[in-house]
Image 1 (cartoon, rainbow over the protein chains, first blue to last red):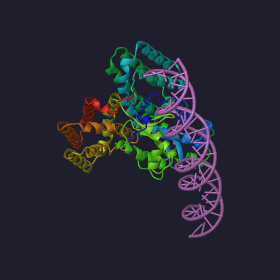
Image 2: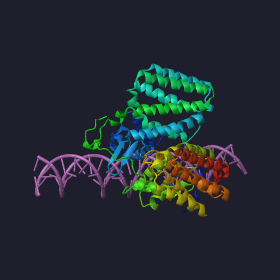
Image 3: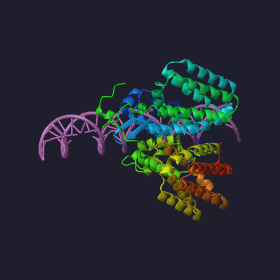
Length: 240
Length: 240
DNA sequence: CGCTGTGTGACTGGATGCAACCGTACCGCC
DNA sequence: GGCGGTACGGTTGCATCCAGTCACACAGCG
């Protein structure tokens, strides 16, 4: 190929840095907004996504919408079929378990990256979030707090690829977490609270090995709980 | 939003299935070809990618090229900067170690999915690949065989998300694997061969725990070897 | 009454053209 | 001679237009 000659070619691009909330880029803006809408439950798994509808909704043309869909496809959030359309990715129980097993292995690593950099203020905030989770009865609030709790526990990691990976895994499974959160009883909720508390305690003690084990067990228990509610994956019954 | 009314909306899309080598889709074709070109070393990390050049090369317009770039960005292979351009993602040593540590945790899991479904023929093929690796002196051949060896060891996994994840991790680190392969000595190469052989043996014995440990150690050792050659990441010196 | 073939509608995919932005180089000024 | 401002070239980003494809529905046939 033609050797790099123009000076611009040698400019170092900024490190990927901020995958969320970019600026003047319509394509990225649509991608972020659509991702948020899907994760927020507005478009449930299996629902059709029409390019024109999205374009009109976000005040853009269909071209940036298509680019956003391509990006979200790579994220695993939507499934594209050539010449046919786009749907919000629907996971089977087996696929969801895959994601959770992956999380069991990966999130302890991310926690290991993060933990040493969490100061007392951050840990206090974690504890406060855990308390608020125990008090709320609203599902959406519970999900939001849960997500923020874990995200903050990873906030100390100045990693670039691992954080994105974990975020992707969370995003793709968010709809199912929502569905099963609706059906967990007070006892299970109590266990979640205890595990979060154990995590904070381990982090305070600078006992990172224990912290890793706690988060791993936390995810594993959730996976098993989810597997015991397969009906979550059978809504939207298979079409003939 | 408007409730799904058109019958098409309820059609179940085919499972994500084949992310590689799709058909009439120009965008996907460009993405695959460009991915292969990057992984193949034709576009080294840090090099500029001009849309028009790619479009002309693959006989397409700039629109599918941009969609392909968006997908590859989500794959972590290219880095896009708004209104500026696209570059092949360049990893720092720290980022590369992140990817390798992730692989250490994830690939044993994928192997666990795959191993039970590998029959004698598959294991024979693995052994044959390992032997050919020991014989070859060509770097590209070595890399190709190594990739195929590991890919085949995961071929039994009928997983959908994990396989893609591992493939992504391999792709993003391929250039660095190539760079350091050029500088490993006969002793290290011998160790690689032994580890591959140990893996096949464990698989033959249906000793999956050992297989997991072997693959984990294999990746860890490679990571450390790579960390001992930081000069790999200092080519293309940082621009002022 | 059930099945097959064809027509129509709607959506997606791609190409072209234009506007906006960035980086570079040149020129004037301090 | 060094520095700041400005004009230019090149590239990216987006909107519009057109062609291709798929799904659905209806008519015709067995």
